[in-house]
Length: 253
Image (cartoon, rainbow, N blue to C red; front, top):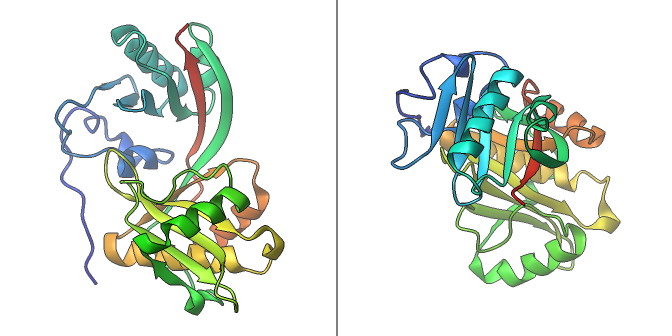
């Protein structure tokens, strides 16, 4: 089994050893090391932050007050360029004292280093190619309109699906990447609305997780904090739940 390893740490995000602490997996797996050329990042006082410049999105890990301070510094240093953030729970309220913070959503960043137990139905999963993209777009548009990524995205390394007896798609999902580090990220898992509750999404999630762990040594995903069925599934598949986050927008008006 070939496993991709991440490069040794360098300054500046990795000088406080935050990546070794509980609740900091987003730093450990999500921030590239060594530092990519041109990346804006900030560090100090028990927190770190780094910028996904194309999206104008700041990621942060650490103690909430310190994280809020770093994100405020980023907003002042790069006026008009910071449009959103993800950070430790509570940072939205702290940052909201100084900036126009809107639409906060609680998330959990979850991860696993282990292959899940074999799930019934995994034998039905097949990889999809570019010829299937139109079908995928139509399926996601109907059964998961708010999907996080779509066919043709440069971040996606693999699409997989389950087809029903008639050959039509009944479930699909992708392995995308965390933009800064390239670590595998489970994305856009969707099931036919009429067939939910039959384990199709679970089988697909298990298959994609196994694929990522075998090739890159880990798999990550984002879960809405109040999604109880997803929480049970991901826990059953071995995903750790130690990294509560909040994401929100920043109005630049």
